Length: 216
Ligand code: SF4
Ligand code: SF4
Image 1 (cartoon, rainbow, N blue to C red):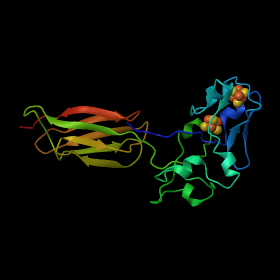
Image 2 (cartoon, protein in one colour; image 1 turned 120 degrees about the vertical axis):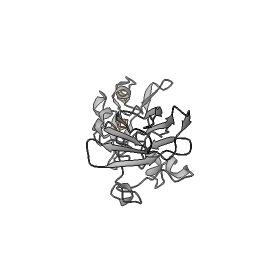
Image 3 (tube, rainbow, N blue to C red; image 1 turned 135 degrees about the vertical axis):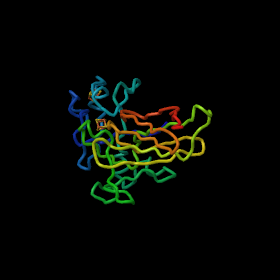
Image 4 (cartoon, helix red, strand yellow; image 1 turned 90 degrees about the horizontal axis):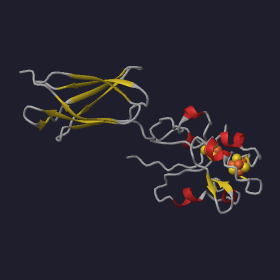
């Protein structure tokens, strides 16, 4: 299970803004997107339009609401509350041109969440969840797990492969695969026949017990 704190992505091409018939959703010069409570009629169209599902209806006030990026605090020179109170400094707020928003400490490019929505989100992520392939390698004859088995995933779209070894419980876990790809999984151990399979990472893939046949 993976947890992801999801807030308004303050999209540069925000479908919520286009969906609102009252022009109640606005983008400030600094890029923060906010809903004007004076103009919102509570029709709910923006809630349906937001691909990130981060707008909710305030039934009591009869209006739509969402993260404002704490625009009121930013105007006073303060950080958004979440960035201020996070004990792990997991949230950084600032000028998009700052290098901290372009790459991580290892030089890897930061990502946006669901770029395929084409909303041009302006929240940048480090370590977004990626699909994984996992399983347990088993010898059905001895009814024992097999450790130190080489499990290789070969990307069928690009050059490259990743190899992991099964641990003392026979478990293997290949992490951070690309979503929506096909991989050839090769499971090899001396004394056993090769196990080959095509795995599609349209989600996490738990292969369960993978039984290897002995060669003799
Ligand atoms: S995340 Fe949703 S609510 Fe926020 S700007 Fe984008 S479309 Fe609008
Ligand atoms: S709920 Fe308010 S902000 Fe959302 S589309 Fe309707 S009028 Fe616009």
